[in-house]
Length: 375
Image 1 (cartoon, rainbow, N blue to C red):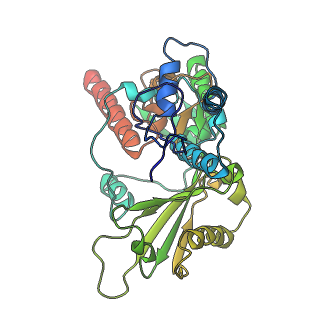
Image 2 (tube, rainbow, N blue to C red; image 1 turned 180 degrees about the vertical axis):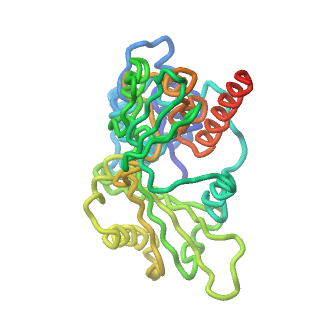
């Protein structure tokens, strides 16, 4: 028998998060807590963190209905919160309840998600063809206020480069860490925007196997989920995605599972070796497929985005008290000479590779327009 939660008196069907529970009536009703948040924030101006608002609604529901939740049901709620923290790239205590999905007011792409078979490096290689790409040139200072109109860039090796226009695509986290000195200093609206957006952190784990052992249970989808055993383990390998090539060679085929770590669970793996993280992940898989022998992976990869000196993040989110307008402020050029791109400058499509790519196209057009006007 199928059961699901009802959350208060809201009747909108869930499109984002539906949480299942046991009702004494056994009726099937799906209502999204996030739809309830959307209803609550109408005409609201005072912000609150998304986690507090969701927990407030959860507690109000319990108080109003006098229903009690089993440990299993509470853990299902934690599973959905962990998925939301994956989407935001941060624990929900840091995320704005008013602005967490500010871009949904804009038209969005439809259709299925797609996997780039050879990775995004294939796209980068095509775009970089015939360009003068210089590696190991760490930029430390940008002067966009010179009297001659040129923009000057200094590297860590004290090399100076000059150009009519400069496009900066440094990750938000590095901007917030003042990794680059600007002359003149960034204006107040950009500094305020940097405070309103957060630098999200998740990590991913990819495991390679010689056979798809999960196929015995997972037949109609390319992913499966894992409900945490407690709130403390929320976000620890919540969903496993089958990223296996659809066309396999006859000899030595390979099958890939990818999962992620989000929210506070990132701290649970921060000081662990890759081998220890893989072992933790395998324990979860063995717990899911208890009726069969789960083989050891033949290869693995654990990301360390937070520790990479030229990344320090994955994607942005709107902090509590922040606004989606911060994306526009970060995108604005300075002196019509210094331009900015990256997912953290794309209000319509933040947090995505497509958003980052389109921001580059946007600024390329802006720069070409300036060149044309100056001819």
